[in-house]
Length: 464
Image 1 (cartoon, rainbow, N blue to C red):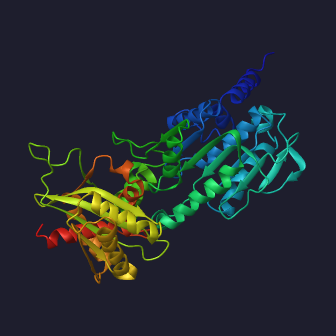
Image 2: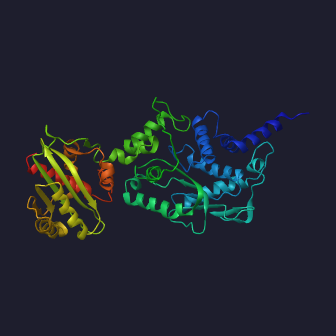
Image 3: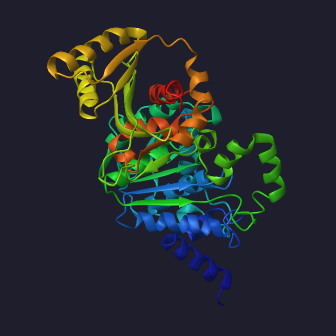
């Protein structure tokens, strides 16, 4: 007599070998249900990426929706496809990396206790963890060597080469998301440690809630696209555009609204809607640009004056920022920006040359922390080397509170300073410093907003 249950179970096992979602459903049917379309989409995207020639997949998904669980499932399924794969996972700390490792290892090692329940060995009987090599965070499959390593920014990856690199949720909380130094350390760990372990042709998956535009997901998107790598980006929002929830039985609208009220809109938007928290908290929400400078019928600039403001670097970690702009109808049109950490022997002639080239009428230079000597040298270079007395170079001591100055002048800057339409390409570091500066939170550098505030203050002195 034909046992239909055995036939159905056999069909499910065969489908689980071929399809990642079916594998997840076989392993955890209560969670990976047919009515959870977003999980089908997530699993389908991961399988398609794994089987494609693409280089990196970035997944941004709300918390508690199964992204880490699905990532650990993927590692198990990948070993079933190819036992020679070498999977390396990175998490926020050693505790989380260990938890991830246990999920993968225990899934493979599940003992069959009920004939009717499908376990990993039913689907991939050839995949077994090597006896005596089942350490917590580093272990091998039979016939392989160092098949899996789980690590973190405080852990180690020495001696391990990966064909699949999975990064899972590096940011702990909103405080870290607002700290540029923490975000920079995450990027350095990813590039210096994790990427150095990726073997030729290896793949990268970054799975995280989107916190900040400069978080690992944001930096990776920008970097790998600039490198012309094949990048996939999957974003899932808890609250859909039509007002429905991504998965009501995981997070209902009532629970979502309650969390938004408790967290605050900016944190909730990052956690649940994948809108980086710094976009909500940025000091400058927009900037005006120009494609063509104001000119007369003869195509001559209509500026009533050309000015410069310079904030010299306080120490080696700071930037010198020199901005030159033209004034037309009490509006400032930025013509040139020098934003650099290079030493004075380079910045002094460069600044003098810029003042000469753009025919600046007046240059104001902060005399704090060596600025007075810098200004005198600029004046000397202009007069003795460039044979020009066009520019009136003056210096002054800036005694006002820097943060207060920057914040109080932000609105004027957004309304009355015009940048070239391609300023992002012309001055990328200055652009990044201006577009990422936070109203609250720890900013790694404030030299660009400080000097730009100097432009506003100079305009006020001119009667702008």
